[in-house]
Image (tube, rainbow, N blue to C red):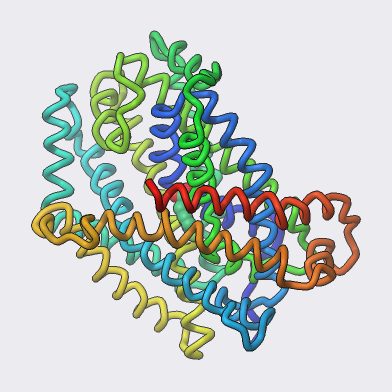
Length: 445
Ligand code: PFF
């Protein structure tokens, strides 16, 4: 049977952008910008995306499309009888770990949509909203109910396959997502006093920049672009041979960055307009924003829109994570897609339930001093992703034959490949050094 693939450029693009645009853009990026000097952070972030992440994304696409296999088999095919396959395994484990906490936050977004619809956030009282959030995350049943529903929806999409599942739903959801975030941005920048927030995002304060901030920007770029764990290798394996990988990676990275900036513009001006500190940190979208929605006209409608955006962004990323594990299991164990997805989802549901409970009744259970939820987050984002990213650049830059890389880069010589030399230089020298720096910093910190 012919392996499933995406239908064409736009089909791949909605899927890769769907994977990249996620909680990382809407929740992590705005608060990191808030804490790290506004526009200056954005400029460094942009430079990293172009110089380091873009070449890595192209490399992941090359590995995937060349082999048309899941991430473990891809490494094994390009490097038979070597331990390189382990990089793929680490990727599958990382995907699973991210799913174990990402789907919990996905569940929270569903609870917030539901509560916005039934008008619960009608108080501007900060402590009331804070305790509502605490009540949700510490409850033993409610967040697990939503998390399981979230996993079920992701599973249904992935069960339908690449073209008829992932691509089809991304085609509907992604344009809607961009449309809604633009509406929210317009609302936010037209609030009284919004200028201060806009200024914060466009006027760089370089005095805030140091190596720590630079490294935070690189780590964020990695997470936001879904790099370092075989996600883009897996999606790459479904890209038709005629598509231009450089163009695809460039458009994906730019769309993801554009979305992060739009999200910043939808959030920061509103935050400044209500005199709240931009350095609120992780509670920004679940605690600060409801207070704002309670105070603006038609706030309830904007609240429903915002949490719907958060939900869509989360689910299109979650399906890409699920696909990494699914592709591996179906191809390795020759299992039917539906069966594999059902088994994997059940396992994810068990781990996610534990990470949800670790916010409440299982608070005292610690793994290496962290709650189960934080452990999954830390292990995947801070250790497995940089390790995977480093391995991928070393693999493509130093292990695979240059002619093979060139061949896939230029679609078997049919494209000009003008940028190949620049790409190859970045992947061989610049990217490994930069990632090693982040990795060392994250471990030492
Ligand atoms: N890129 C997603 C985000 O910004 O939320 C998170 C993510 C998805 C990371 C898929 C890694 C991945 F493979």
